[in-house]
Image (cartoon, rainbow, N blue to C red):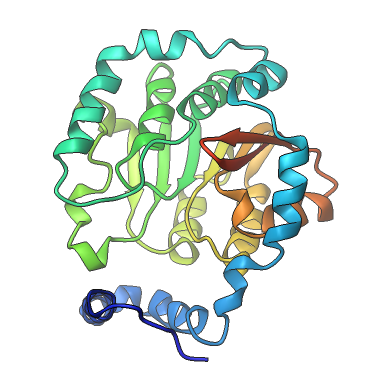
Length: 263
């Protein structure tokens, strides 16, 4: 099956991305995976989507309820305590010349780190760096490190803008790996084999998720927190939890679903 393009601009975007990949031999493995994903495995991204959305909708709670149930913490002080930092970050996003993913459930990430007394966190997917900022605000209290995996934004020449909202004073606590997860995560696990919190927000395909979930879970310490964004895209998260007998909490946030559990 060949991919379908609806507009000339979409064709040009794909062509620009392909040319950018050709200039980066270190990204050739991911280029090969993307070609397969967007041709023979196009349906993989939505595998089990209807089943999981029905399941998630029937069990979902709010972010505030989830943090209270899992961690025994009230999320309300976060926005007040970091009002100036969040305001500056919001302004930075508005000034950014390229478009990336916006902020998610920041309180969930921050209070997961607080509850776990985190000194090491791994995340996949960075974009503007909102999730990175939430984790770093907690980690810097303990001199901890955030390890992030994120692909360059090849279609937008956006490498320099990844993590744009993260303030300079937090960057000493941050290590950014600029490859696909299948290249970044082994490098990260070589540097640090055990993590207090993991946050997944990258490859949306079923196969990509399921592979990463298993790898991240192996390197999450007992008592650590596992968070995955956008679990309604397909059934990878639900299937992963069921296959490992994991009782998970589902959070509804701005029309999407997030999965979180304590190992």
